[in-house]
Image (tube, rainbow, N blue to C red; front, side):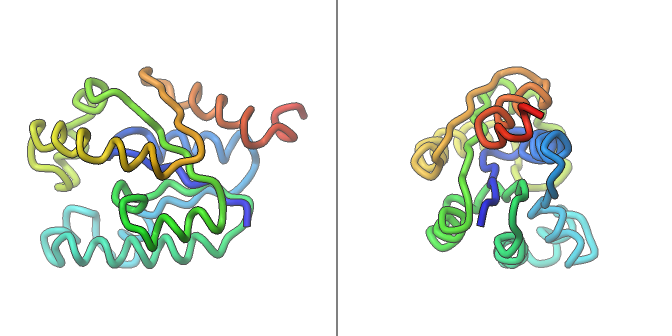
Length: 170
């Protein structure tokens, strides 16, 4: 299997970078959260309100398992996927894991979207989660892409050169 799993904090750009990378490489893109929403028939905020974090995690795990069956694709993971041993093992056994390491200051600029989804209550919680998760994200990945800009195409281009050189040199 040759999937590329993008991991990181909420609003780090997994979806936008992943979509752009898949477009550039001409391969499929899967978003674990979008698949969980599709299965539930409601947005993340609705799943959290109705089923709680446990229900959302179960849906995300099922979506990740389904995505892991694909090949030559880019997968935007749920922020918590690499923090769970079974999910991380699945990703490592079916592809490469990339941590999109975005500074907390940039995440805070994007915080309204996180709040809209209902995943994180306030900016202080975002800071606490960043501090506690960061070492786990670093330990989970094969590649840590640090980027502090808002342009997802730049990050996608960097990943394209690393992981898909055949496509890059076309």
